[in-house]
Image 1 (tube, rainbow, N blue to C red):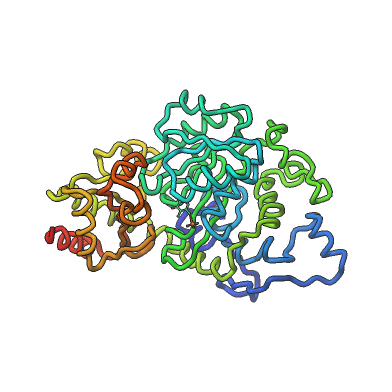
Image 2 (cartoon, protein in one colour):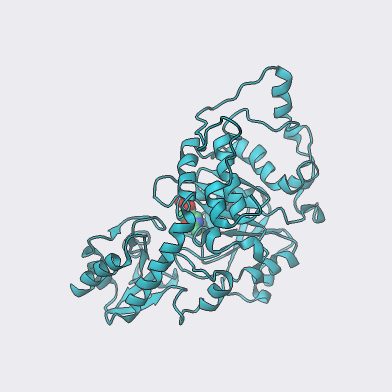
Length: 426
Ligand SMILES: *Cc1c(COP(=O)(O)O)cnc(C)c1O
């Protein structure tokens, strides 16, 4: 599908039925697959032939959806995972082991921060967090001889920081490591990080890709551009024999597919965070309208952010689509068609006023989610960060009055009317 535009890929990539096969991607609701001879099956286990034998490793429904996301990102290979958390964990653990070090932007999703600051630490992988606005020199200063990965989010959740992808990619490559970027918020519709030098992209498909808040899921896409063999001592898992597959060397046998083949054949085999084919089917239905929905999310968020900014009860608005936003220029460079539908803002009068306002909303629901079709809000100080004092909240970068508003694809007038009536009550 490489000659086609991204809208066409959303609809047509991934599943290519042959004569008499179902037009719509089928759900291969089967754990296992049949062969005629023991020899045929044995070759699959040795990675000598490609084919399906057990859904924990690969399933045709999942593979078709992974291929679609791979084409949307412009990558070389991709795999689905059971969640965005699993995608980020596998993406790092595929090339890091005990004794290694990684660097991560401090403006990342809370679950990702916990994963890298606490859980991978218990496995012997150290992580240094850096300012997302760090200069190249400051990023360089965080590298150690055993650093294997630089990690960041294209648009950070919930801080809405826009990443300078080229700067981070250059810093990573000057130190011989790949840049992994979590591209959940812009989606490949608005930003394709490989075009700016990122090497690996991850997604929580739970958000815009699914788009309907139906299925938790994740995806890892490899650009195939990072030259692992240039640093054979740094990435032995890819460049040296794997004894669990009779000594095959992933880079030699699979070329641009080495990273994803290893993550599938080894990490997924052993840790097993597979996406169910049923969920992959639903994800694919979401992907078919991704280009329509993302454009509408951004259009609505533009209108809502302008309404909020002009309202005299609103203290501040953070949305990179606004001209006076700190990240507007970066957003224009990397995401000229729009950023995403998520806005954060605070009300004059602070925390108590923000909470009172949210309770008055009628159409907009209070839920722990972002980036789906229905407009929703969350107040981190009362919900995800509720154990903290106001002082601790500020240290964590979460203003006590911060309201995270995920603008959906309803009619923008109705969303604004709901915000307006709730603002009127305070
Ligand atoms: C939600 C989210 C995740 C985690 O994904 P799950 O699918 O909830 O496991 C990771 N990164 C970002 C940017 C997210 O928004």
